[in-house]
Length: 294
Image 1 (cartoon, one colour):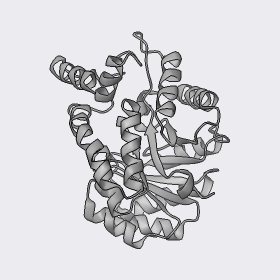
Image 2 (cartoon, rainbow, N blue to C red):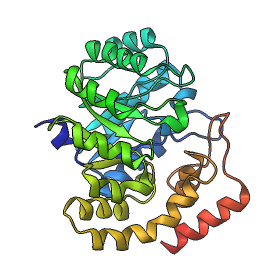
Image 3 (spheres, one colour):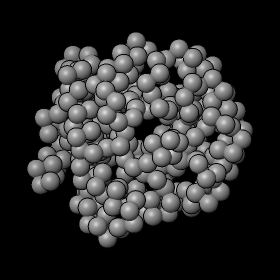
Image 4 (cartoon, one colour):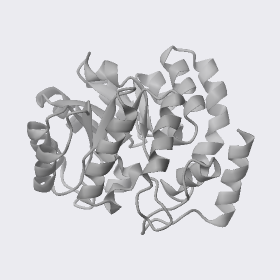
């Protein structure tokens, strides 16, 4: 089965729960994994940026990945996030990281450095050459400061054998449609924007890697499945209830918003590592009311 078939539907970028002393709360992580799988997600992404990976040590990342494999226990596929702006360091990480039980690697574009399109092409080409698993590009210019444009994405898809897909979070619908028009047949394109998932699937995307599915997996995955079946009327009915949720979760910071919601659901404690802090009291109250209403 191709990665395009394996990862069709809803993936969830798992949060990393912390205790009050900011150590990793593995018991809560187990609860989150069970919550999202029971809620219907097709796969999980361990160590995505929603997991606060910039604040995790290498040892913590390895421990989280191994714990996730163990607790998922083959129920759904696992994708592992390995990205950053030091290409040489990432090459070494890809060579040594425990990836045997992963189906793919999600790699966020380099941040801060703002490389040219040729720099982005060479960065991903170098990673793909050493990655033991298929590589998924992750374009999120709102966080990285540089857009991976459609022509570079399609060039990578066509010319680099081990690049299997992209999580597209540019928010640029025209760019997304250009990628979908020009990509190879077996190249996976999924949304990286919860709020745009419905229209992006309508344009031809095959799912989403979601933040909101940490907190509202059942409603969100049902909405995505309706889209993929072409039932956009049914999908809209579900999505209409989720629109306010998207707004609240991303109002101040991700993952502060989704952690606030999950704390109201008694899944995790509301703890984040600096420089990220919990949402304001006013937003927390709005999230509390929204979660209670669902």
